[in-house]
Structures are given as C-alpha cells and as structure tokens.
Length: 274
Image (cartoon, rainbow, N blue to C red; front, top):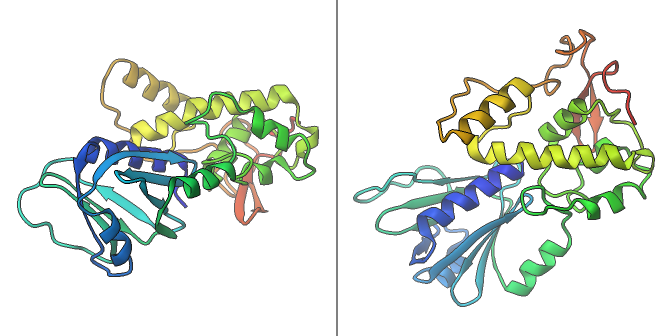
C-alpha cells in the first residue's frame, strides 16, 4: 500500500499541473461516470493529502476523495502532451487539460464528497508528519494504549500516513523494541520518532522513494540543499524485507513476524529500548 509520502507527492504534482484551470474529468472505465460528470468543466482549485487520503477540490464545493488502497495508482504527466492521449488499462478517472493528463487506476475509494464529508474524514485521522508540526495528539493515544508500539504506528487514527516500511525503519533507527506497549513508551522516545518521521517523509516526497539509511538520508538532504538532482540506484533498508539476513549494525539475524496485518522486521539485539 502506498505510504503517505506518495499521496503528498501526487497532491503536489496534481496541484502543479491543474490548479487554477478548468479541467475535463472522465471515466474511461465507466465506473465513475456520474462522479466525473459532476466535476468536469469545473476549475480545479487545490489538491491536498492527509495520510493516505487524497482530496482534490473543485469549484462549487465539490471534492474528489481518493484512497489508493493496495493496488491503486495515480499518474500525472510531468511534461505537456500534444494530441489525443490513449487510455491504457482500466482508468477509473481521467483529468485533462490541453496540456496535461492524469489517470487514476485501481483505487479503493474514488468518490465526489462535500466539504463536510471531507472534514469528517480528517477528524478520524491522526496527525500527519507531512502536515502537522505537533505529534502530541498521536502521543496521547499511544501512551494510553496497551497495544505494541509497532501495532499503534500502523493505526491511521493514531498516526496518519505511516505504513509498514517507515514503521520498521524508524523503530530500528531509534533502537526501539517494537513489542513495547504504548503505555510504556517513553515520551522522549516518541518525540525522537516523530521528529525523524518529519525528517524522512519529505525526502520521500522529493525522491518518490523511501529513504531511511543514514548515508542515503545525508546524501539526499545535501543534494536537495544544493538544488541538485538525486540519483539513488535502488531502495536499501536497515531491516525491512531483510528476514534471515545480518543486521547492518550488529550482525545479528533480522527477525520477522506479522503485526497488525503486515510483516514487521526488526533486530532483537539492536532494538531493546522502550
């Protein structure tokens, strides 16, 4: 499932391509035909994200709500195109102008909603490191819970936008035992995790990939500070999908088990802190 940085990147690209202009909205697949008709020929005002939810606001208080789910994709042409753009695959929703085209495929949610309905979605979500400066609301829920911190980080009403990769990697980066009950997690440990997510997720938006290994984090931050392009060859990780391999830090074998419906990866030797 795409994590929060992917939705924020999509929102950024949609806003850059379409904001302030009337757009044509269609449903080549046919399943969103009625919704597309409500939006077509209206000015696209803003695209924004909260966690794994995308909201595209149109004039007339009409909002396209998208959740990509497990297999959804939303592609936006970076360059202008000329002529008719062929439909490839099952496109649920297409947004076009004379210069750009965006295609949504395979979403879990694709619906036209009201501002009140959008507000109700936001109210059910925890703070998003890419939107909120303060993670206090997440801490309030975590430190009152007996669930493991690994499980809590996956609950979107606790913390919005963090998925399995960031969960595994940020717990490793701060040596936190993933089985630690939320009520036993130290406030200082949570503040380190929150600050780290606030640091790492923007790198995902900038590079379109999850960057968590310290050397790569430093490389990306340096390149962005200089206004240079970032060229990372492949995704590396500390523990994610490294079951049975040696921990990069201590050489112990990386462990894995199902927690909250996804495979958690961790190092039992490095991650002892509560």
